[in-house]
Amino acid sequence: MAGFALPRFYPILDTEVAARFQVKPVIAAAEILDAGAKILQFRHKGFFSRHTVEDIERVAELCRGAGALLVVNDRVDVARVARAAVHLGQQDLTPTLARRVAGGEMTIGYSTHSEAQVRAAATEPADYLALGPIFETASKRNPDPVVGLERLRLWRPSALRPLVAIGGITRANASRVLEAGADSVAVIGDLFPHVSRQAKEWVEATA
Image (cartoon, rainbow, N blue to C red; front, side, top):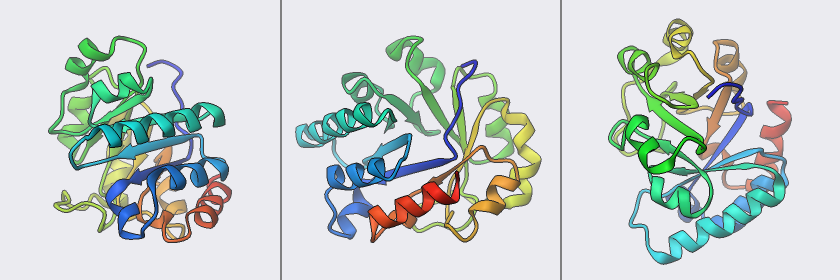
């Protein structure tokens, strides 16, 4: 965990959101990476078919070529196949259990949504934490209660490791989130519909 640093721009490629805009995930990934992103999470909440895993492997190759870290959402096994990092939610394996599968080398991220969860996560072997939703979000079907900037500011010291803020973050409010203590901002909806242009604007805005 020591020495891990989060890029300030943390794009999340959600396959459901990409489908809504009729954009193929591998194409969207290439455009995000071409814009200069150094981390990319692949989030797929549906069934993990062979086709989905093949897409992830193609995105992993793109990430390696771009010198970027690929993060697979939820699935430690798929992350191992793709030689990627994994991001775990509160309903997934805990980082402690995930380490039994992943070993000590895999980067692990862990989502939190409350002060109690942030404090509990401090004892877990995660490399970074996510906190949110900071603002109201349409990217999650059943979102947790909004955290807001003041709670982000108050809870940040308890994280004890790099923290990415997530939920309703746009180019218009990202600077306030970073000023409140986040090391990085996760972006889902504000990557679309013009992925290439919007990703470039995000890279510039968080440089």
